[in-house]
Image (cartoon, rainbow, N blue to C red; front, side):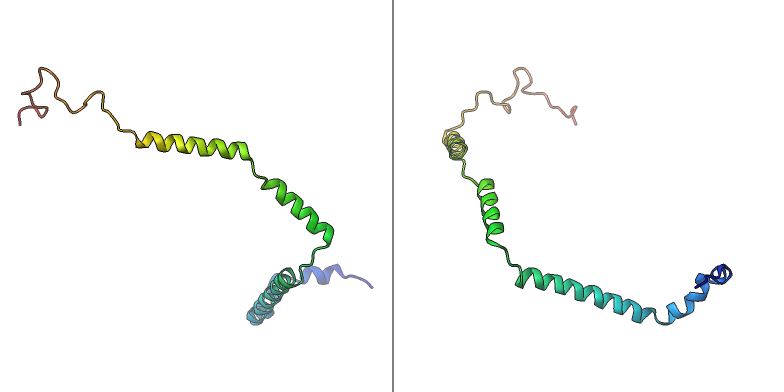
Length: 115
């Protein structure tokens, strides 16, 4: 089988363009259906045929248990800090210095410049 370089050099994108534009809707529809169908097949296999062996199940349970192990001391510390904050919110607040009280010597003056 011989390849003719001259024939390949004459082949251009403009020669392939008319058939592509004529059947482009069908080509894209076929590509879409293939992609959609393969996605549905993958989804179906993952949902309905997702069988795990006993060894894989055991490894998953062990890794999940390690990640979600209950830390009693840190939990007690968090509860204590929450209760301390709740007690501090229950106490009455005493204002030591009233920021809205007039300054001595400025009782009659206005800050707008006499307007």
